[in-house]
Length: 137
Image (cartoon, rainbow, N blue to C red; front, side, top):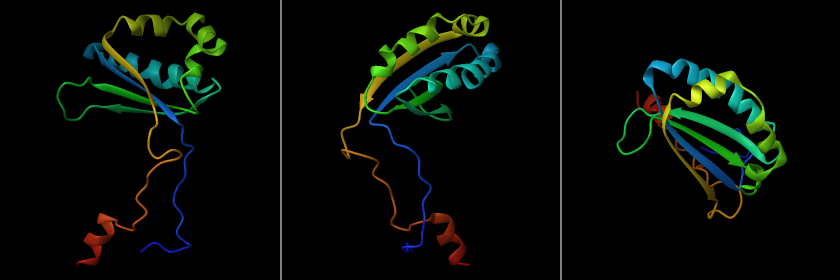
């Protein structure tokens, strides 16, 4: 049951997302993941207008690429045109240059939020399957 005292974890919400999917040579996934986690994510999140990023690896599906990153952007795709973004692309990185040769496919799309107009549609109904299973014992 949801009560006034119930608090939910909050996270900043951006109004646009950049979706990047990649296929990587399996022999070099460790280098790819090290570059993405330790270098690429922290660099991009330094740029004003980036809100957050989450990475995923495919467990099941067809017609999609194995790695997915969802970048939340504050308002729109303008951070992708910024001086900071361009400067990062020019910054030398031996690891990045090597990893880019391991990426065999890449898809990228910028999406603008259409609904709800602001924030996120969230389930605050109080339904929690793990609690329901425990209550039926």
